[in-house]
Image 1 (cartoon, rainbow, N blue to C red):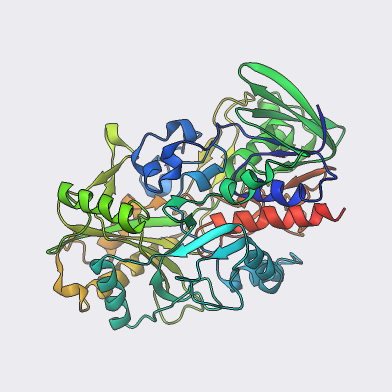
Image 2: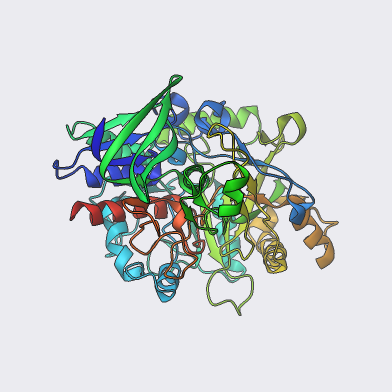
Length: 530
């Protein structure tokens, strides 16, 4: 098989890239996706992916014991399905702060400033005019449906009111010019169903004769002629195939799979590749380095009014979903906040996700499974926006079917611990404010016994999780260590580009689905003009 371009991965970025690149009809595009199609009800109904067995849609990655968190190891959920992680995620739509992109541009990444990426976000979005406030910087005619929580739980409204009483501003739209504040969650949904990147971009493009998508196709290696990418080898149903590209190979596998594929193909740290018997094509030590995540802590509270916990309220939740397309089945989180833990911060240093449902994540045999609390309760997730700590991804073997080694080192920097500890104090101040204070009966986690700063920091060390926002392992930049240049070309290799969250120079303020889609669209526009 021969094509103009081969796209590896039909995830958030890959779907947007395939759609944009195939628009003209004069370029032959092949998309290879390792996972199955996205027709399952577990994907269509928003919360179903969180409650049903999603192992068949996940790569099954687990991190190494983390010395910065008392040797904690955890599951790194990454979508292995058409739509990628956008088919199984929490659907929160966050562009990131304008200062994130201006910071990238200040590092020398021309074309990535907020003014340059704003038109891309605007063209991608189709905001719900009944819920998202009208704005010149929001999009209304794009393919990605975005709606806001319309019928929040009374406890959600109480949390927002308490945050305002504690001195935080209310924002009608944290995706507008000013991100700071607390507001109702914005979600990638259309009507009562999830609206993934595949729904928005890939599915409508499948009627184009120049676009072909093959599912169940696990790419094993890049085909290289010297330092020129000319195709890929992939396995499907136990048989290996080759696909050739005349113009280029475009990697959209995400922050785990993309660097793994580069290393399997001889692009990475030379000494490490030789240990696995891999011939070194380009000695690029930065491949797999700079692994970033948002460190996250969970706080839960019992209340004396009904929430979505308990069998009776599960029934009410189902009725609310069927009648309004709202409630916990539609969205696990109803409010989002970007706040400063101290006035000295130049921009919000933490993000809050609020759910009017108390839940935890199991350990032991139930490790990674969501466990609902039996009593009326709510949950606040807090993650640090711009983490300082960095992890690393490396090969475990030269076998592409063997998972890579993920070293998260999530709290290597004490600065990250300090920020999360301050956030505990900040959330407690919100919870202690009316009207929420009148509803709360007990702080379950961290618990009232955790009051001294040292105890709070210990709680952070023992309980911090990942936010499933892996990024940065093929960092973009203009320095000699960068993996890709600002036009997303892999340094030292011809006809090879990367478009996914792995290229982020540093992590944005917010969830990473929207920025991944924007990156795919941006590369698609650039290559369409060639």
